[in-house]
Image (cartoon, rainbow, N blue to C red; front, side, top):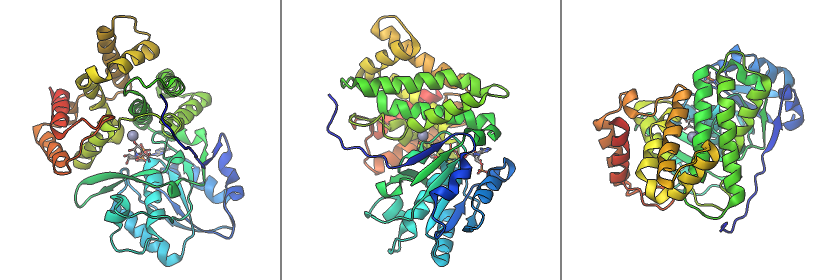
Length: 386
Ligand code: NZQ
Ligand code: ZN
């Protein structure tokens, strides 16, 4: 049965070719804007020029250098500048890391305490104020453009945590698929894999008699599977990049998860791997998900079988369908050039022990039933290195 819910997603999505030119209609000229960006891809692919041209005559200061897996240390520098300059609008231009980092900045600028890490990232205090954000997305993957989450890392302690609040929804997000043509194939593969796992986290739980949510999830999974070889080929078509971009957005904008139980164990474990090894977010998911599916096969059986039948067209008995569905999932990641064994990334027993320790110290159990303990996490990761 679908659970009680209230749902509101206030993000205005402006989608399509040439839409960066609409920026002046979306931001008030009275605003003092901080344009945030990453390592400079926006200068090479013409996105920066388009943004500046659209916003000529607007007051803009710039903050660059937000790294993939954005760090608290870098972001606090932006917070100091934004406070000093009395910025009142944030315009992230880039991938999920730039958007996420900017969400943190948005919450931190008006915050009046003295421990942004603890209170905002770890969520020790509620905050009801944030600077408004409008985003220009250049990497379809995270869904950050249409959700209120951010994932922030801390270099000093090798930590990585998710945070979020409804006040962090972007006011608008511009999604122009033409900005994605400069993406390296590895980032496109990451984007497909990340979006795929986002859907799986919200879908692959247990039978809840939620056919709208299930079929919506299966539709997004099938779309990602279909579009993947097209966008990874040389010279992809605009329409395929557009389908990929929209699929990644709806994979994590709240539609699929409304009223259903969710898993998110793969992400929780994956974040620890990135925190310790700096491995790309999507790749950490590929080394966890198939092993987690195998480890939790009995409890997830009805949904794994449904996924196998509907997404992969497998027609066998339940047990065999589940086995084949897991194999198909591994083969899909590998078709993207993403290995699904942690050992392929040089991860061994030492990392696994550290991750087990972290979950044990936090006394944290994860998964849709809250039944995956630190010890289970070790066993899942051991399957990934064997
Ligand atoms: O930094 P620049 O120079 O812009 O280059 C970036 C970066 O090196 C590059 N790039 C982005 N757009 C490009 C481009 N290169 C060429 N052409 C373009 N159009 O791609 C590299 C990776 O960018 P990044 O933003 O780090 O990737 P992604 O969008 O995959 O974001 C990953 C981060 O998002 C978090 C992850 O944990 C990770 O920190 N996530 C955020 C979520 C959310 N907010 O809801 C959910 C996800 O599960 C995820 O955890
Ligand atoms: Zn993700």
